[in-house]
Amino acid sequence: MQAVFSYGGAMVYCEFMSEMRRPFDFWKALLIAEAFIFSVYIFFGVYVYSFQGQNVINPANQGMSMRGPLVAGNILYLVTGLIAAALYGNIGIKVLYQACFKELLHLPDLGSKKGKWIWVFFVPIYWALAFLLAAAIPNFS
Image 1 (cartoon, one colour):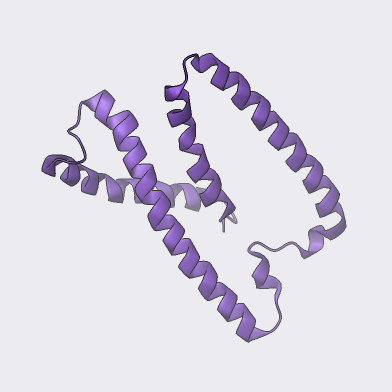
Image 2: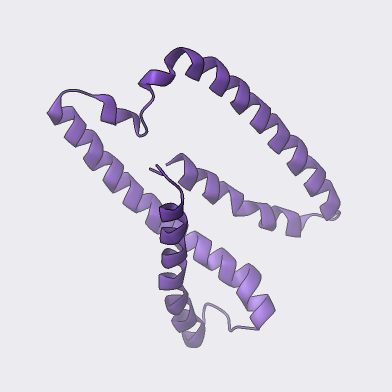
């Protein structure tokens, strides 16, 4: 779920940059923020995983020994994962269509009938690429 939420936030970067008067300021702020996030995560990872790394299983509920709560947790993970995938997939496709494909390929607006059919065509391509990315990363939960 962390990857889904991180990806959803990353889609906003282009929108923020397009609204700024001086886009170069965005890149400076982005690099500083990413360096800060990276350094905090590295410190957290080294400190916490050095003490509790042997107990880390992703997703965390897979470490439970009782079958009932384990199954309930798996059902919750599946339902929330499907909801997040549908919502972020829809947002991701729309942002790509509006920001990239519409401008570069001069495609029609999403409100038109032709634009809706083109968007429907992009959905399986988007999910196929997402599946290939997830399959290419080992242990990507």
